[in-house]
Image (cartoon, rainbow, N blue to C red; front, side, top):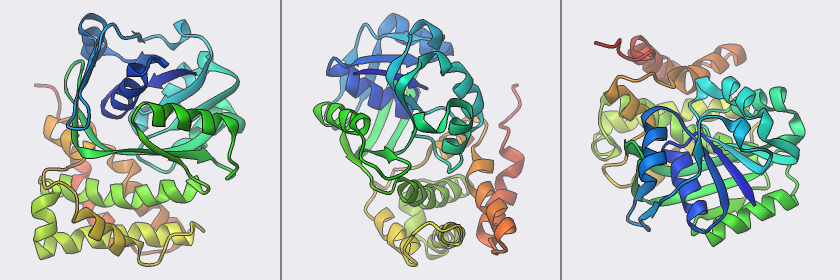
Length: 308
């Protein structure tokens, strides 16, 4: 199986690294200091699950040099989705699957519009990772799970092949019979977690212990569930409450990529997370005061800090 990781940060670097360590033909697409470090020092994953170091690693900033692959895994930031779709066109063969592991609920529509519906599968990643320094991925906690599937719910040969590769590489993985619902389930959790950790500037531990912060987390998640159900997604009515209970079992130090980006002065995915919930709420006639407060509280930071 030939795999291309479009985006080699915390998510793409981790899962691509696991697959490459089992000798699957994995090519990483990266840029900047991360690209340079991977070329000279390889890719290192710091993890309590199974640390590893791959050297040499197949990495490039030009997808056209790779050629057609079986699977493209997209894990770039949400604002880069259209540009990523343009860049990966040379990777697309007749049966190539393109799977987004991004954070929002719009990526599949964008990718299908640019690459063709038949190539696009849905997917989610559940993991806490970050680039500790160029060429080094830090995995927080023990969760490292992929769920993917065809958008029409069929169980395809290409999904089965990727599942086999993931399981052989020590990745917890499964095929979802309703990947759209699965994506929305992650969206509920991620919008809640990204909103509160970034707005409060704390990891989940102190947030879940404080009753007011906990109420904020629950309120945000309930609004995401409400807009999803209104759009026809089969989310349980009490799914937000379930997710807050799930958050009680996470490591106290777990936070989100948006919180990391905020602390580093980077651009935020806010418009595609809480911002999307506010937009959907307006379109559907649903009040979203919690998400609107998050959007208002963080909007002036959404483009990051200007360079000194």
